[in-house]
Length: 227
Image 1 (tube, rainbow, N blue to C red):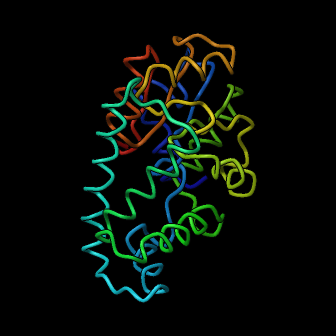
Image 2 (cartoon, one colour; image 1 turned 180 degrees about the horizontal axis):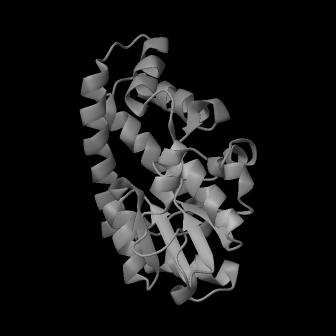
Image 3 (tube, rainbow, N blue to C red; image 1 turned 90 degrees about the vertical axis):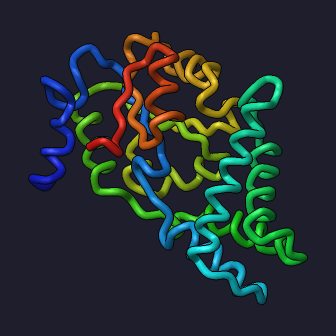
């Protein structure tokens, strides 16, 4: 661990990470422990090019953000809110790709290309701060888990990519049946790990889906974007 990494994981107020009283540390995955490599915009651009479509990466980035927000609104408006499944996750990402490429005739082929791409270990790279936090949680002797709004592709990726592969418990929303910020997501994780909400710390990068949602569920939370 580098000096910078040590400084990062010791930023919890008044103590070293993880804080006293925490018996379980649950990590978000994308943006917290790993990130796409190349970026989402570049991966989408490259997939489009393979199917004869040229779109600027900056344009893709803006369209992707808007499309992602639309799908969050769809899930929030569903009854019950934020319920999901393998089918819903595939539908969600297909709709995002369609929105990004404006309903182009080739968007179905681009979706299939991207679905395969982001299911490969090579599409992801570890984040230095994430690696440091996972190592310190493991060394502290607490229970460590991953719980993500990813789909079933995460299960295979986590077996082969550090630091995900260091973690014994891997939970994907498509397998849980709920997406964050649904309270049912957090209750499901508690049941699987055999713990109460007061024992758990969630580490994540999203201020709403990770940090605020965990606190509403009675967990402690740490936003890595704040570090």
